[in-house]
Structure formats: C-alpha cells, structure tokens
Length: 449
Image (cartoon, rainbow, N blue to C red; front, side, top):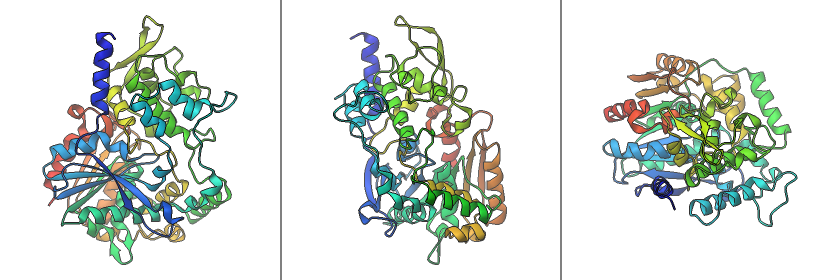
C-alpha cells in the first residue's frame, strides 16, 4: 500500500471513530399513533451525563440525528457544563443499515454495498440477498405521523433531559428549527411547552409568518390520504427511501474509497443532474451532488460550500475533488456516513411537512385547528432566542424571527445573517475553525441562566 493510501486509511479511521462520549439510546415515545411496537425513538448523546445543561436538537426534513454529529460533540466539548442530545425520529427504526455498517467495518466492498441497496433495481440481475423496502400498505398509520406526534415524542426527550434538575435548551435545523418554535408555543394538556426550556436555538428555519388557508390544509390532507405512500419522495423516482441510501452510500464511498471511480455515476437510478459530464472519483461525485454551484438549484435543502471537480484527470482518467469552501468534503462525508444514527431519514412522513407548514402562524387559526395543532401560547413565550440564517430562505428566517419576537415576550435575541456566504447544511458541517454558527452560538449558550 502506498504512503498516500496508508495516510488516507488512517484519516478515515479517525474520522469514523465516534467520540468516546457519544451514546445512542432508545426512548419511549407517545402512545396512540400506530402499533405500540413502533412507539419509540432514539437520541444520540454527546458530553458528560453530569453536565447540568442539555441542548436537545431536532433534525430537519429528511434528516436524522447524524446531521448533528459534527456539531454535537464539538459543542459539548467547548461549552462548559453542556450535553447535546440529537433526536432520531421514530421512522429511523425502519431503516436497514446492516450493509452500511458492514462496509464501514471493512467487511464488504463499496460495489457490494451499492448492489445490496440499489444495484438490483430495474433490469439488473437480482442478487440472492438485497434490500427490501417497506410495503406502504402496511404503514398507512404513518399518514398520521405529523407535528402532534413529533411534539409528544420531543416532550418525552425534553422531560428525560430535565431529570436530575438539568436545564434544557431546545434547538433544531431547518424543519427542526420550525419545530423549536412549535414546541415553545405548544399546549401539552394545559402546560405550555416553553416552560420546559431556558432557551431556543433556530438554525436556518422557523419563525412566525402568515396563516395557511383552511382550504390548502384540507387539500393537503386529502391528497395524502388518497395516495398510496405515507412517505415523501425527495428525488421523485418512486422510491422514497432512495435519497437516504444515495446520500449514505455516497458518503461511505467518499470516506472508505475516495479515489476510486465513482460507482454511483454509472447508476441509471441517480438523476442526471447529480452527475458530472466527466468521469469522477467517489469523493468527487459526492461533492458535486452537494456543492451549491453544481447541486440542483431546487434542492437548496442539501447545499454546502465545499469545492469543485478537478479540471484535470488522474492517471486512471478520473477527476478528483478540490476543496475551496468552508465545508471540506472529507468532513461532510464523515458526518454523512455516521452510524448509528445516520444523517438522512430514509422514510420521512409527508404529514409532518403538511403540519409544520400550517403551523407557521404559531397561533390558533382555522388551519391549525383543523389539523389538531395546539399552537396556543406564542404571546407568553419569554425565552432567549438564537437564530442563524443562510441563503436558503432569502431572508425569511430572520424576518420570521423578528415577527415572533415582536409578538411574544422574548427578552433578548441573537440574529446571525450569513445569507451571502452559507448554504443550508454549512452550519452543521463547516470546519469548526471557520464555522460562524459555532462561533456565535457558543456565547449565546454561555449567557443562558
């Protein structure tokens, strides 16, 4: 093995090693939202259990607890007396990550990984053993897995975090940031959610805006109930789980075998807009799919500032990756390949997006009443608020935060606007020395009571 290969192997091993303080634990969820055997979620914990302050983080659309892997450990190490708990919503239990783990452990090759999850689809020969997706007809109950369930499950995490007199800060990214506001204003059988907390952290999402019409809410629910699948299909290829599999297999390839010819580039299942017009390595394909300059413009949810495909090919005719941004692709791949508790939620319930969209008013109105959303306490919220904004919302995140501050009793706030320099996933993955989210949220967290 060449010195370069040895160095890359050592780097990969270090990147893949979970912090000694990380723990992935199961927590009982709310009853009554489908079969009791599925009534649980997971939390990945970072930091010392004795730390008296707990930052609970809610992931965004199609995201899992692993999306906070990069910042969770760092914050628990750099903010005194802080633990970080990252939530994995209950659909994550439906993921078969067995071959992801086998590849990470070096038991199988990248080609075997790809064949297990994706290589058997279409006209390709079917291997004896391959991934079997969920049968939607057996999971129709997940059409009710909306914001009410998310709030009830989140409260169980918050109450677990509060045990022993701990103080809880609630944070989230994207839709998870919206859920932070939702929790604060939620009515839990007469108990306002904000009273469980000492602060709010909203990373590129949420805020208060105009109400959704009742007709739109009714149509969204009708369309969901008349359809066959409870899951959102990000790529639009009829395989709702494929976006998560493409992301995770791509990340693993970029970590374990970065300089080999890309396996995903040859797959007909990967939409053409994710493929460069030159042959590339595993690492280069992964970077091309997520960098804001080459990733599809409509998928701003997955963008980062990372780099570009090399203009020159290597000795094997493959074009590699050149980092030139705040989020190096090796770091992003490390976060994206993390197990247990992965970056992307393979099965993301449509109802959650419907409900969060309707709850953006953060008040009781015809749409929230129809959907059974208890967003009743916005005027009383008296917690400090931190807000970070990237290019995704075109200014709506801070505008919505200002509207909420004006409407509520928020005593003080911090707004960080990086519209011109950050994309949606950069706050979660940028190298810490350059990460303006970490630089600005730490003083906020230290100031909390």
